[in-house]
Length: 355
Ligand code: CP3
Image (cartoon, rainbow, N blue to C red; front, side):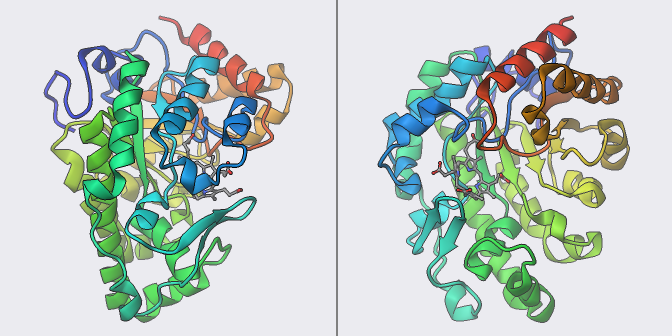
């Protein structure tokens, strides 16, 4: 991130001075900023209502609906950032791949990519392929005012895991078999995905996103050596491609305790940490010069307020010595979460950290 000291990328003067972007830049904040991965979505009754009868991927192509769904958690919870309502497979659908999101399952790809001929089906993404994103972000930033909008994309490894498996997997056996057995095809696949991902993030920043998050949700399946050898270059290519915009780049994965140093090295300004590693230990692994985001266990929201507060205190205590902390869950909001528990948690962290 360039230290320009002034708004860049999709930022305005109002969003530049927000607690969220200050924390990303590791500047002093009026209070610890809070947002939640998957804050827009099924935990909210107002989301379920507007989504009635509209398939998931179709909902992502309707700017009015995207705007409404993105704003819902901001109105309700008083979070410090909005995350653009979309999905990691949207850019893949936009370049013509036959895929869908099955309710209760996740992304399903009609013809998995396992050969060089399959790879040839991945063409470049142009802004015209996702004109609805540009339109929605224009509407959103007008409504959001001083609340920053986070754009996002899936990282090459996590996208490849769906493309090669054909759907969600617990073992990633086909994807890893390609990674180990045909490293050239694997490298070319990840490189293609890096270009598509970078193009998708650029569209979001140019339309008005103030920060971006790269979700490498499933990278925790990899040993550090394999991550470094077979995955890191592609994610680094994405971060490099958007570095010039000067907006914070957040890098997140689940079960990535052993990879935190490498994920920072890949080029992130902020490293997301799941609930398995306390933030003070995560800071040692990531090293200086980067903010951290996290990391309360999302299942805690199924307990009573006092228990949530005790754990929130532990997260804040482990972040006390950091110079940049964005409070979040260690992974996304689970669909059955009581939204009031989220509202209470935002309020608790804000009040507790008021400076
Ligand atoms: O965070 C937000 O509020 C923005 C919205 C968002 C969605 N997907 C909307 C969505 C974000 C950031 C994502 C990212 C995403 N999608 C990831 C990375 C984040 C993570 O959780 O690790 C991954 C792995 C996916 C793939 C995906 N899409 C899965 C596993 C699922 C769930 C399938 C299910 O039904 O259980 C989806 C569908 C999806 N994406 C939903 C939403 C709101 C639910 C579908 C619906 O509401 O009908």
